[in-house]
Amino acid sequence: MKMWQSEEIKQTGMHEADKIARYARRRRRNGKDKGKKRAIENDKPGERGKIETKMDEMQKSMVKREKRGQYHIHIISYGILLLVMETIKYWLIQHPSIVAFRWTPTQLYGATWSFLISAISLYVIAALTLHLLLKLSRLRRSLPLGPIPALHSLIMSLVSVAIFTGTLFSAEAEARDTRWLWRRSRTTSFEWLLCFPLGTRPSGRVFFWSYVFYLSRFLHLLRTFFVVLRDRRLSFLRLFNNSVLLVMSFLWLEFSQSLQVLAILFYTSAYSVVCAFRFWTELGLPSKTPLSFSANCQLALLGCNLACHVGVLSLHYLRGGCNGIGAWLFNSLLNAAFLVQFLKSYVKTHSQRKSKSSSACSSSTT
Image 1 (cartoon, one colour):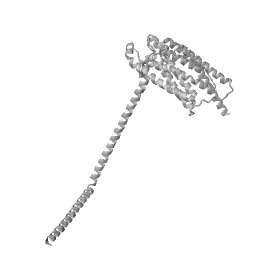
Image 2: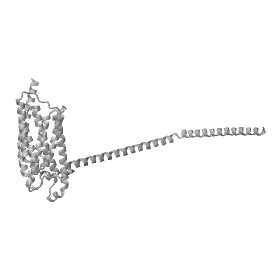
Image 3: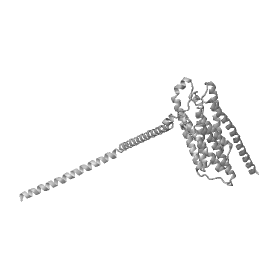
Image 4: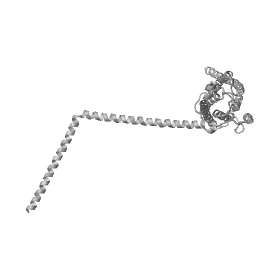
């Protein structure tokens, strides 16, 4: 009994000691929490300042990260742009078939005199025959062609842009590769664009794009048949202009004629704009004066061409001769004849428009 009572007293004493220890721990914890709260309440501005500085640091780090991300995006986009430019340059000026191009009548399509003469004759005969058949027929309405003229204008515009870009890059590459020769002969790149040195052969990048321009003239002939089928009209100026352009582009290649680089750049830039405008009007989108727009572009083209012809003539006598001067003289005569015909039709159309506008004004006043 005594042993059991002693053990029970020990257990109760241990329980009391545990309770006292737990109570002491609670008081210590409550005291620490109250002390922290008092410290925070007493030092609120300092804590707020620390929080604000931390927020500023976080914002600055976020801004830095955004700038780094934008910088990486710019680097990636610039790299993609360089890759695209290098790919375009490869397919326009560095492809082996372009670099190793040579004008050979026996190996290239449409590179013979017989083909040129037969193509022009067939074009004129087909256009005149179609026009006469439509005149003799009883059909008075224009034939619906659907989206074919618009698609043709779009293709011609894209082809002109490609030829312009390829010719420009090719001229820059030729200028870079033959710079040492120009220093010896004391000529500049602009003089080379106007006047090829004697002995120039039709080979290389520039003449490849000249050949592509020559082939694109056959694609341009289709517009004559579209005009005949839809508008029932065929002008001598259109037939003469298309035939002259075919002959000129053939002579550029056959005789390595001077001035062809600038002529191709002028023609393709004008045709890309005019064909794009035609595509715009063919889709039915609003346009004010499509006829005067194309005529003004062609007039500006003829003016630039005439100024370049004067430069070729002066360089021919000052520099000791330009390559293909005989073909240049023949092309100059063709250009002069076309300029006369174009000015006649241009003045005629503008006088008719003025008379129509004056008659409309007089009728409105009455």
